[in-house]
Image (tube, rainbow, N blue to C red; front, side):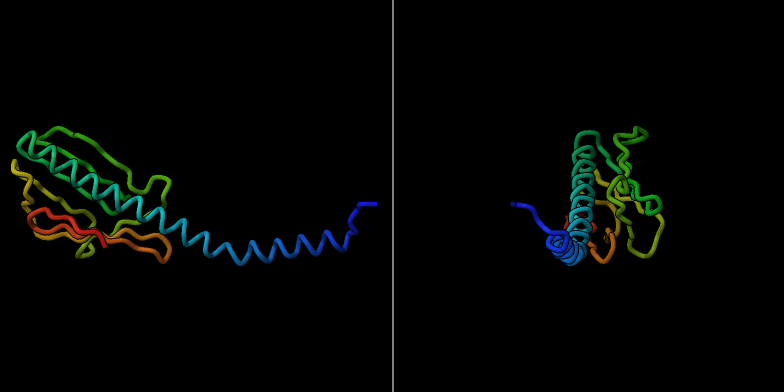
Length: 141
């Protein structure tokens, strides 16, 4: 007969359970890292879009709000785009100076008109930072 005993099946299931429990923290950390890096790239894309809008329309403004994590791109009084950074990612947004919101303005040349800003995105023990210089240069960390 080609059957398996109950003891053999229980042994195999136990080994699968031990392996899965050992891999779970690594899988969670990878999911956190992917969510944070995805949100960081979306923030960078929003800043680039606001700069493009400013060069096309004369001004572009990005407003970031920490709770809930949202961003809005505006030109003059027109809303260009609003983005929920929390979405399915469960990522938190921390703004420099522990503020609830910050505004980043670009002029018609695409240059920033603000003090330097630091935006930190976190989930679990993973974080990513976007630093925007006063002239609008963007650096990822």
